[in-house]
Length: 278
Image (tube, rainbow, N blue to C red):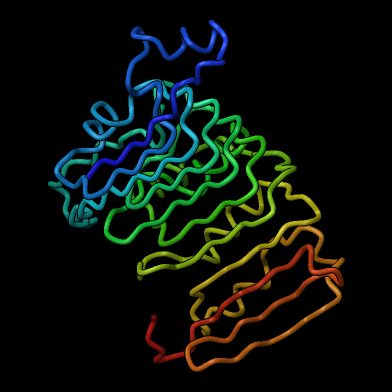
C-alpha cells in the first residue's frame, strides 16, 4: 500500500516563480508532502530504493516506510563450507539525495539507514520486528552528524546480523558524531526482538556522542538481571541529577534519575522475570 499526499498547488495570488515550480515540467514525486509505504515484503531492499525511494522530494515533510521482510536464516558459524556472506551497504541515499524539508522519518523493518544529509530532520524512528538490521550502532553514529537539528531519536528492536558485528570488530576507524545540540530524546528499546540489547546499543552510541545538557535518555525492555550492566553507561551531565524515583508495576520496574527541573533525565525500564510484554 502506497499513500502519498501532494502539496497543494499555488493559489491564484502566487507569483510567477511559485507557479513555474508546480508546472507541467515538475514530476509528481516532487510535489509529495507525505509518504506512507506499507507491506513491501515482495521487494528486495535494492528494489525498494530503486522503485519507491529514489525520486527527488523537495517538498517532502513526513515519510513512513514499513518493509517487513523476513530475516534470512542464520548461517552456521562452524560450517567450513559455507560461503562468507556478502555485506550490503549499511546506508543508502534516499530520495535522490534531495529531501531538504523532511522533518519526520520512520523506518520499520527497513534494513538500511539513510546515507544522505537531512538538514531539516527532527524526528527519526528506527524499529524492527522481523527484519535484521544490516547496520550497527557505529553506522548510526556515522549518520548523526548529517542530522544537525535532530530532536528525537528512537530505536527499537535493532539487532544487526553477526557478519556486520564482525565487520565493526575488525575496523580501525572509531566514528564520532560530535555534539548533537538539538537532541531532546534518545530512546532505545528491545521491542519484540530477543536478540536486541538496548543497554549495549546505548553504550555504543553514548560513548561516541556528546549530548546537550537538556536531553532525556530512555532504555526500555532491559531484563532485570542485566541491571548491573547499566553501571558503565556514559551518561552525560549525570552529576546534575538530583532526583531519583522507582516505579514498580506488575510487568516492569522503572528507575528514573533527573534534574530538579526535569529537563534532563535518564530512565531504565527493567522487565521483571516471567512478565509478559504487552
